[in-house]
Length: 176
Image (cartoon, rainbow, N blue to C red; front, side, top):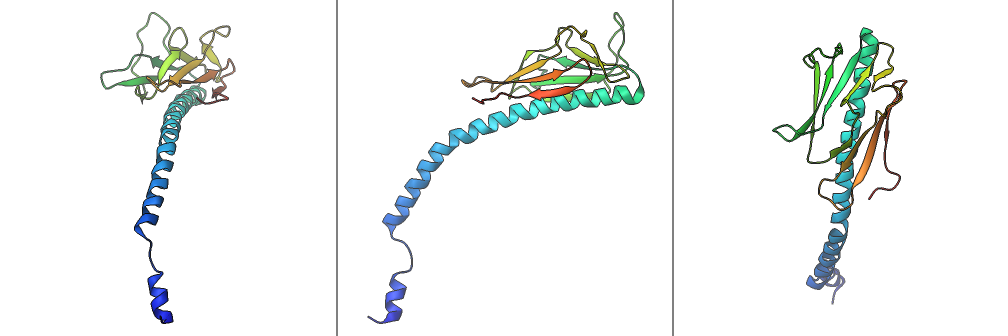
């Protein structure tokens, strides 16, 4: 057998080798798919928390810039399209005046999370100095969301608004 013939017979893979590689790849995919699904659900929950945090911070900055109270009103029941709505309103009217038309709206899909707790008035208000004035300083102003909806391993994220106006997202130490 010449050297050229022996090299050409070594090129390529056998059917058995290809089947073994495909079985190994299939097993890896079967193990990795649930992990990627869990990672995706965590990402959806975390992005919803960051959107809420960003809306609160933008409202606070708006209140400071205009030196007027501004509020975020949280609607905890989904609308007809299956989305939660957060409205930024300015100026914040004193009761019993009607709520003004929102100047900014945020829609978040209700498929990835649900509200567990929100402030009692479903509203967070900042004054012209950037401090939180509603709910009252001694009341809890935390928003707690959880997801995935209908899943066994539910995670909770807290969006906390301090009296001084600081907004922070508190994620679980251990994700489920």
